[in-house]
Length: 427
Image (tube, rainbow, N blue to C red; front, side, top):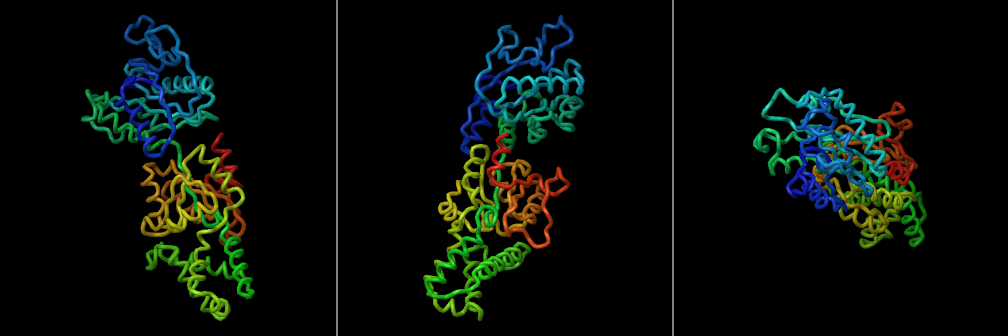
């Protein structure tokens, strides 16, 4: 809603942004446009003025500002986008007064539409014909509006890709200008939550031990299966970290796991067990990493999260492994990202930036969820939000209790389960 939105024009940026969100993320969205052409946000103090009718804040939800019949807001929108115009500044409204009126307007909207999860505020467009203008724009960009208990997201750079050739008169966008605005707005859509997988989503230790125990009983061999699983996992961690730092090695974790398995089975402790395993048996054992079971909260939590956000992996596991694991453990990913697609392993920044690039979002609109603080620290360096979930036996030795920034820690949020995270995002 707001000024500078052509009502019913398919080339306008709200319609284009909607199409982009539907196409890229399969969002089931419906758009309603409330246009106030030429209107101020606040009312003009000069009652005799005929060029500027009462402002949006006083003519609340009138689709036609010159018609005294009030509109009838209906439905339960999740998001309201407010596109602000330049008429207030043209009528000598100060940035501080504009800010106060905007706060009043959003409070009224939040009371009327209690279903709204977030308000997107688009500052007045830059006026290329008057470079010295734009005090309100600069004010909102420098000090984005905040209101307690409301999620307000100021699109500070929505017109950053605009140029004078994208406008009709230096201010009002052409069709190509609306496309620029829509592209930027689409990148600010509902957030995406990326998940580390091994240890965070699935219990690799318990799953591998259970399969080794069954295999040991089948062949009449007893051993310390926890030590076997830990050694196998340690080899994976050492190799992925070495490659992430520029070392040589396979980017396919199946290949890596098989090489580590062969080395373990050649050691004196496990050679007798290895001698009992045929090549097909070793092949099948290596695929145990495709059959890992989720933690008890993983499947219900991911299904709940999927209703609010896009959920995807950002794992060092290879693509086929992640797909098979999702089928086995009922993990309802919207998509899977594997480090092998980006030419390195986490915590190399390439992995995080690669996933963000393919999602057409900015880093702050993506959250990384992991049970390992080193993973979150690396994600934070590229601008991602971070969510820590403690899992038994997963954190590195020597790591103290991980706390949220609000408690003096390093991560944005600490949760005990995926279902708790879903509840928080739902609120």
